[in-house]
Length: 558
Image (cartoon, rainbow, N blue to C red):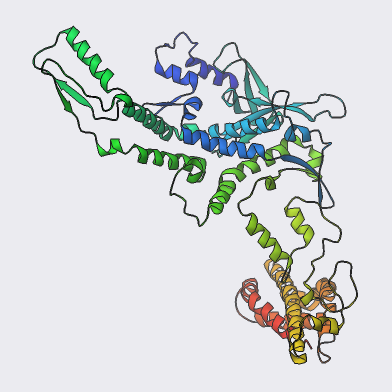
């Protein structure tokens, strides 16, 4: 849309246009961005925050995002280090501009995005020197004075300087998208986000009306409405005197139980109050749940009682982090990555911008620790460095090896990171205490069997994955089985199964890798002969096939 045509449309309904009457309520609503509601209350970004639940929900999300450190990382050989020398690092970590810390900056932009669908900031860049083109400071922009347009197919931002867009004295600047940090919420076109204040105007107006009704109800001593009946017609003086004395007596909770004295035969008739008017607390509780739904915040976070359907408060807190906060963290990370890193840094993946989520006292801390313990014990599937990377920690020396427990050690090694010597059978036997010699042998054989089964099961799954891939790409699985399978996977199998060879009986296979390849080849050939899609057949038989090979391999253990 042409920017001048857009501004002319604004001018037609501007309160500065002489043709627009200042007595027109719509003109004042446009001026202050208000939305009329069925309840009669006008809702805008100022009145919306008078709803306590809405203010609390928005501040919860904005404060949570703001307090998390947003870090620029340098990535090198899988190591992630904080790049404190990067020009953007102090802007996101300490101070965004001369007047706003990083906390306040993130808080404001997030609150704008949550309530109005969009948070904007201008990226002021260096124009010369070694940091030319880099961000120098991040300046907040008022969402009411920032617009997104398409001009000749190109995205542009219009920023009004010195007043609103309908102000003739304001200066309208056209800004390139690369210079605008735009945190947007859910929207229909991907350019701007929906304004929750506008979408939820009816609910917010109802909350405002409910609050006003409650205040008026209790200001009148929470008593039913009253009609005063007199015989004949009162003079103006007597009417005003009776009205004033009654209001002074019955207005306010302090006068709720005082005795009323009526003169000149006046009679008071109470109008009954409906049960709905009396259920103020129930309606206020419903307001909390309504606002919580709009903000995707668990109702208990806004003070609602008895609404938690989770087994524990920890799970409800985790829902708040997952549903109400994490999507905003991702929006920040992607936008900062796109606008604050150079093209080389993005293309070569040498840098990344990410929140330190571990700074939160995460609700499932105990469950996460238990998961990591299981990943390192039993039949381990993770290394220490893999876990450290998940926790944003640097790798440690000798931390990339997946180490089996001592009672499931590989043959010929003691499973220590320093690669110590072989454990003697007598040493292993000591682990079983005072058990008999036959019991010791049985326990040792079971340990060997578990180790062999786990390794064969893992290698068989690997072969199944590649067999499905060949079938998916339309290649001949039979040809792959007879030729390329051995060439592609024999080195990996030799490395994984070669160390298990000492655990096999003397009459076991001479080469564990050859045995697994031949066995797998026979099983897949049987599937090929069956009617149907070969990829689907392999996928359906994968679990049973891997378990069959694992059990067969375990029988070779001495």
